[in-house]
Length: 469
Image (spheres, rainbow, N blue to C red):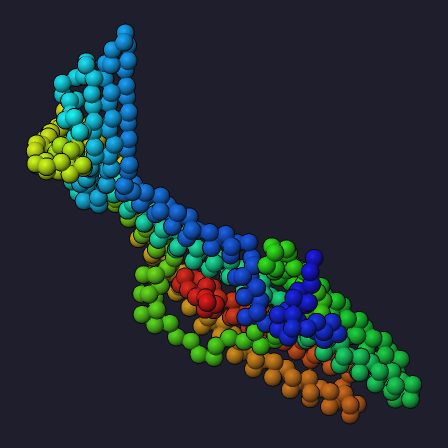
């Protein structure tokens, strides 16, 4: 697998410097995820599916060219020759326009199919003034596909929101693990200095040998903590690698030389969520937009089922003319020499199937509407939960920072007493362990606060917009 360190170095500086650790910032990481992650590419396919559905539905309004020829010869007789070509043009308002040319001949031709010697021209239209006047299957299909397009766009946004939430959480854990490793490294370095000093004092006869053993045990404890912190950092890097892919859809391996930017763990200093932001989230949230699009589809289906309760009443009218007008024969006009008119009526007597399907459509619509209200309430409450998390974690981060400072003061005072011979390694260790734990806990609190901000944007449905191009 290709090295992410190499990829980042090429992308950022145009050259590879293997000796210098590459800093993978959060912005660079998110850009790699959005550009190359398979789920991001899957999300990009969703609107294309919707556009294809709309394109297919618009095909129901495409003009249709027709042509037919039928001939019968038997017992040396020309029974008939039937030739008919035309063009049909469906319109949005339910009127179907058509124009055509017909030429029939034969000794046994049905009289109603007779045409002038030069053929018959016809232009007209068909209109449904009963069932299908306001909506028909063709218009319903297009409306449903347009709603489906909106649903796919919302689905794309939600997929990106989910992808970024997991990716950013894993990146935050990686940064926090690096910060914790730095704390452990610093603790080991300080303990090594103290062990060397105690050992030197023992050799000079100022301290007993038991002090060197206690200092060595403290060093071993710090080294064990360091190893655990290093393990956590490596495992966090492996989880982060799950989100890293190149443009050729090849997974990238996070190399040990790649480190995060520690500042990526910081959060905004002030926070306030306005009522307008909540209202916007409840209006534009991808999950709600997708549910609304589904409701629009069900509403179209309800309207169509209600239309089926109306009787079918179709009117058809066409102007007729002699085909000789095509040859500019004198005294012949293209149209107006005759007409053909027809009426069709049909209606079931009990309408049991139609009424049943309408009832089903209404129930599905009511069910979806109730689900939308439930989702809207759930999103509002989840947003408020994340706000509570942010406020609480922010207070804890401030309190934790004060605890770190206070523990540092205690340790500094104890070190001064130890240097003056008024304290022991046991007391110094007793002061140092809480300081290390407090620093690591502070890193964890900062990570939880940072992830709470990401979770808030995710619950509001706006997480992906911060990195949208």
